[in-house]
Length: 264
Image (tube, rainbow, N blue to C red; front, side, top):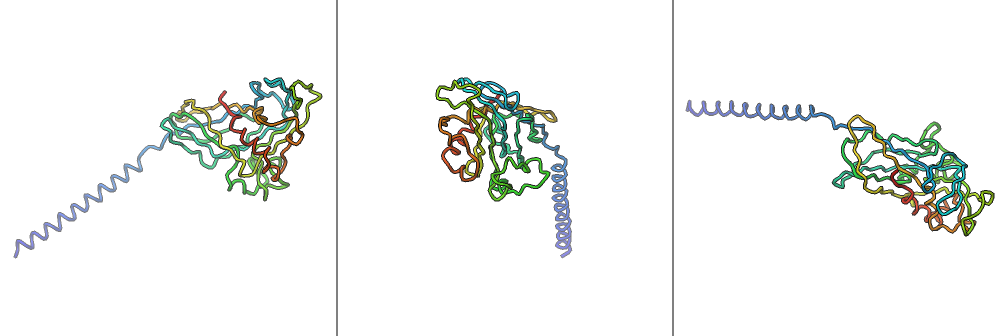
């Protein structure tokens, strides 16, 4: 009878020892996880150039002769870029959350964010806004969304934002040999969720180093928006409102957007 009582006491003792060991291991494990070093990050910038074919635009309203001989000038060139993703070497993606930039001519460098340091092979992004962003009400003082020239109406809502606003003058002669005096105005305000387009940059390896600045230089060739557009038709020189954005011309220009981008 005494032996049985002793065994029960020993079993109870061993149980508490085992329980204490488990708790100790659990605490040690949690402490180890909490002590893990944070993932190193670097600062990624997009350096976005405004070009006409292979010629960089030095100033608004300067006349540039494209490679096909056609004269063109820009008086406004702005776009929204969002939904940015970095493509790792293994093909997986690193999303840059909640980042929207308004690219305008006067500025070329844009901080995309502190991103995970490492090796990447490509970049993806959208020219446009998500449905939620496109429904956002613009508040005075908002440096990204409070830009009346980027609204499809007198206010940002209910019609939404202009994703790409490019205006200027262009030679519309059939032989692309008109004089500067013969250039006529064009104005494209591309918007609505249906006309958002994803841009997939070609593979070009780059590295983001911890606590360092990395600049990815990307050229935006505005001449490409005219691909497949019959400039001899006056109606093909203007997209101004939400109704226009449902027409074939707006869809044509939207489909040209991914071809506007290439690495410097």
